[in-house]
Length: 551
Image (cartoon, rainbow, N blue to C red; front, side):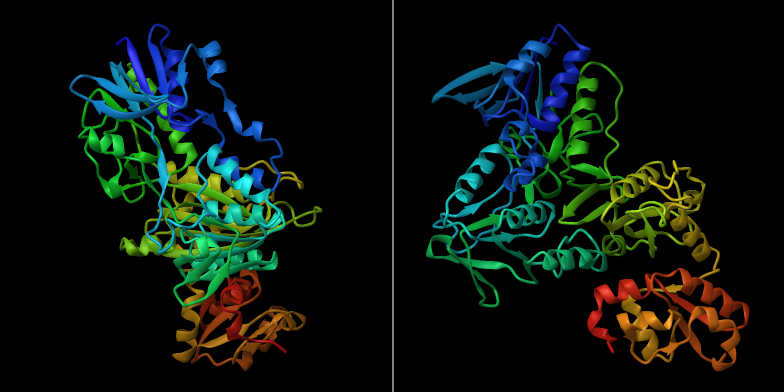
C-alpha cells in the first residue's frame, strides 16, 4: 500500500488522515475536498452569527499548510472528486476548470451529509433562503445579516441546528419565527420534555409555529406561506429540515447503498468494494440498542470512525460497533440533552417500556446557583435495560446525559445506577446525584414499591373513578391546582387518613414527585390502593397548563 486518498475532510476525513500518518510514515496521504476549508468547526458555525464566537478565524481548525508541515498530508481544497473508477482504482478530480486523474491503493469516502431541500413552490426564485453546513454557507448568511434591511428571519425546522440558529439570530436582534411540521420542537425528544424548550423560546420572543410547514415562497422569498394560509414576512429564511447522506459518488461507483441512501459498510468500514472505505454522516451504522440500521449524523461518532478506519488500514483490529445517538443543544438559558431511544421510538419498536421523571439540582441545593434538572429515563421494568434518557435544565445536563450514555454503552441496567460513584462537593454535585436517584426510583418501580402513571394517562384514570390527591402545601396551590382533586398536605396526611375512602383508588401528586412518593408509601402501608403521578405537578403544568385551575 503506497497511496491513500481521502475524499472529504472535517471530522471523519481529517481524523482518518492524521491518525493514519501517526501510524504509518511511509504512505502517501492525499485529501481532496470540494470546499475551501478542509478542517473547520461546523458545530460552532451558528455561534458566529450572534458574535458569541466573535472571530471567524476561530472556526478554521487547520489549514492545508499546517497539515502539510506537521503531518506531511497533501491537502487539496477546492478539488472536487467527480468520479471514482473502482476497476482502475482512480478518481477523477475537477480543479480550476481542469480534470485530473489520480490513483489510489486505498480510498476513504468521507463526504458527509447534505441539507435536505424540500420541494417548495417558489423556492427556485427565492433570493433569501439559506442552509448552514459549512463556512461558505456562513459567509452567505453573514453577508445577508450585514444588510440594514434584514430584520425578519424564518427558521424552517426546529431540530438542533434550527434551534441554535433561532437563538443566535434572535440575539443578533432579528425578529425570529420557527416553523416545525412535527407537533413540537425538537422532534427527536418526547413532547413533554420538548415543552420546556418551547416555553424558553417563547419567553425570549421567538415565535414558534408547530404542526405547520412552508408550502410556498412568494415575492422572491420575502413571503413564506404556510399550509394553513398564514403568511410570514422574511428577509432571511433558513432551511433546516434535516440532512441526507451525500452518496452521489458512491452510487455512481456502484457501491451498495442501504438505509435512506446511506453507504453500506461492514464492521471495518469497508464498502462493497474492499479497497474503498467510508465513514461519517454518509454511512449506515448499527443503532446499538435496536441493532437496526440507522443514520446518525453526529460529530463524535464521525471522529471515532475516522480514527478507527485508519487503524484498520494500518493493520490494527478495530470493529465498528455502532452508535446510540447522544446529543445536546442550548436554547437561550435552557439545555436539552438526550441519549439512546426516546419513549416514542422505543414504543414504535414494540419494546417493553417504562419511564420515570425526576427533578433534582445540578449541585447541592443549599450552595448558591443551584439549578433544576428534569431527568427522564426510559427502561425495561422487568430486565432493567436502559433504552434512553433525556434531561432539561440550565446546567449539569451534559454531565448526566454523558453518564447515562456511558451506562447504556456498558450494558448497565437501572439497578446499577445507585452504585455509580461521582465526585461530590457542594459546588459540583449532590451527595445523592439525580442519576443515583433515578436508579433508586427505578428499583422502587421494578420491585413494586411504587406504581406510577404518566401525565398523559391522568385524565383517563380520573374518568375511570380514581381520585387525585394533591399533597402540596396550601401556599403552593397558588401556582395552580388539579381539577376535582382532594388536597391534604403531606405533613397532615397521617392524621387525616380517616378522610379518605379505602374502596377508592388514589393518584398522588406533589410539586416534583418526592413528597408524592412518601405519601404513596404511607397510604399503601395503611391499606390504600395508590399510584404516583410521575413527574408530578411541575411536569403536568408544563405540558398541560390548560387542564389546571388557577385561582
